[in-house]
Length: 166
Image 1 (cartoon, rainbow, N blue to C red):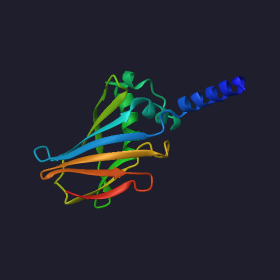
Image 2: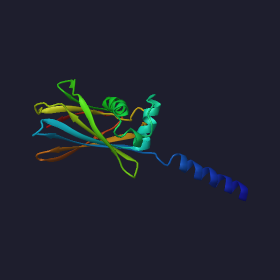
Image 3: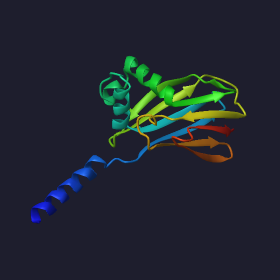
Image 4: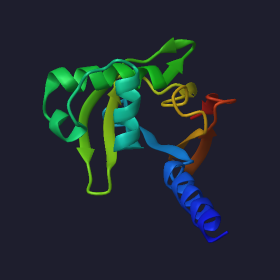
């Protein structure tokens, strides 16, 4: 009986360790800069989640820390990010350029993007399904900074594209 109880507790403990990371989140902040006439975006994801996703997509890069400042790797990351985060104006996707990447001590990666110079549109459509095809429970949250305040938008696997009035 004691052996059975010990075995059950070991299995229970290992099952928690294997599924300790049940929820997956990505956070973005975005604003239209009136002076530069560009959208400025920061995307924050968990480093090991992004590395796992890139590996699954067949993207062969070193650890993210080693990619900082290396254009060849940043270009590969930019291409994958652009598949999971898009801004569309009148149905046309905007070109978003990766201008930097920062990794903090808590394994959080912040990716900085800007659009090309453009007039401020009245509405945009945002598709934010980054990592969703790899992590089905992935949730992405966008904070949009507007002159009248912040707007919070949630993106789920079932609703990964949203129309937003500026």
